[in-house]
Image (cartoon, rainbow, N blue to C red; front, side, top):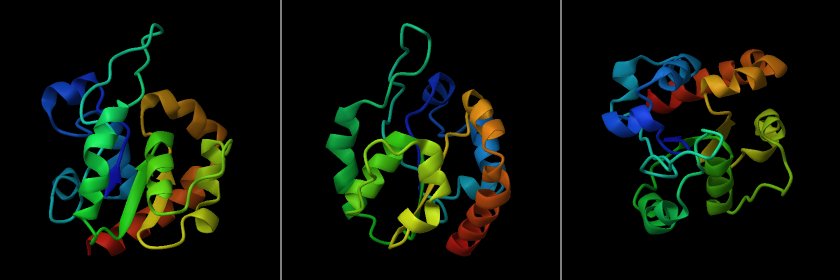
Length: 165
């Protein structure tokens, strides 16, 4: 399962999750084609918010709307016990999924620490693999954390290949 934040404006208008440059980068990270990514028998996609949450005064995206999670997510995941792996993209998704599975993240843990300590904090079933958002806005984070490409992406690709057969 790809568990993201909330759709951006373009994705909100198209109705297709990750139908943008972020999706291209995410599919490249995962090592899958667009066809495989949108094959519902192989990959589920469930953002924390199902609609574009709007912009901040600085033109950034607002956080996912809390009522979406409250209304839909707990029930959705009870109905999907077969999920073997959750790609938790961004802190809203990470905080929710780790807590949902009884493994809440320590307060104050930065994104780079969550992603880097994946072996320590991601054990259990389903397996949670914490990822930064693949947005161009995180290009600086990716440059500051070159270990992500060399250490995390091979694990991500192996995990995805194993999960989708």
